[in-house]
Amino acid sequence: MREPFEGLPEGSLVLGIETSCDETAASVVRDGTEILSSVVSSQVDLHARYGGVVPEVASRAHTELLVPVTAQALVEAGVAGKDIAAVAATTGPGLVGALLVGVSAAKALALTWGVPFVSVNHLEAHLYAALLEEPDLEFPLVVLLVSGGHTMLVEMTDHGEYRLLGETLDDAAGEAFDKVARFLGLGYPGGPAIDTAALSGDPTAIRFPRAMIDDGLDFSFSGLKTAVVNHVRANPDAATEDVAASFQAAVVDVLVAKSRRAAVQSGAKALALGGGVAANTLLREQFLGGCADDRIQGFLPSRSMCTDNAAMIASAGWYRLQRLGPSSLDTGADPRDRLFQR
Ligand code: KG4
Ligand code: ZN
Image (cartoon, rainbow, N blue to C red):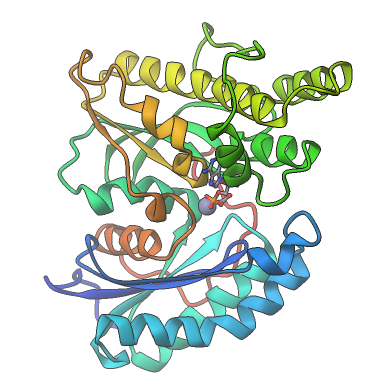
């Protein structure tokens, strides 16, 4: 019989593993907040020629990359398997084949090393990127989580205590970036491509719609995508950089206005960003505007913590383990795992 779990002692190291989409990542984090290593192997080049992530190609690449990536994370941290106190892995949401590679490896390592396995929700991990780098952020904390698959405003009242304040009614912000970039011929992944093109464009060149900007905390981006397509078809000579900059400005205006509204309405003490789109240059420039006026502590995690990585998995795993104890080794991958039941 297993001993009842009494929490990890101070100084404990968690190995995090992330394989939910197209990054193979492993990381060693001490006490949920001190990153000893964070290795991310991106498969972008493998998927670029297809214009998006091909699930079967992703699973295969994770299988090949996970062992060397994990070994590198241990070496860079200067530790060995015997020093690891728990293994955390993303169990969902994500691509099922891709998730299975990380989940199986994490459970095998936990079993071999005789340490707890802990299942982590990928969205919860994105929320923890801010707390990982700034553990003193005060609750209630509002996080704008903007990734390729999700756009949500989440209120965190304590560790593991979340309330959904608003979410997209159609496309995620990252999805809109990726679709518009593909339409403009800027390639994949679209977010960074638009970010770069926009640097030499005029954000006021075209006035694209700011859907629902004055209305509540939900988002809608599919109309904006259509507006870009219609504009370019009607104005084939429009400079791509101007279209990219004007599109980006429309997305960012809405994200910033709603985040601020969410923070003020919920009486938040802090406001932070998470998810891949949080790496966007304009969003980062504008996100904190107004926080000081509203007496809210604003925080931008570093770009490498916003995009997919395993340090955020190890951190969220550490907090989860301390609160709820280990996950069962029967836990499988859940491609549609939800952080909220609405
Ligand atoms: O969080 P993430 O790495 O993976 C998911 O969990 O989805 O987010 C990926 C998304 C993609 O849609 C990508 O185009 C977008 O984040 N992204 C960006 C930037 N970097 C990544 N979007 C806008 N500007 C960026 N600099
Ligand atoms: Zn992600």
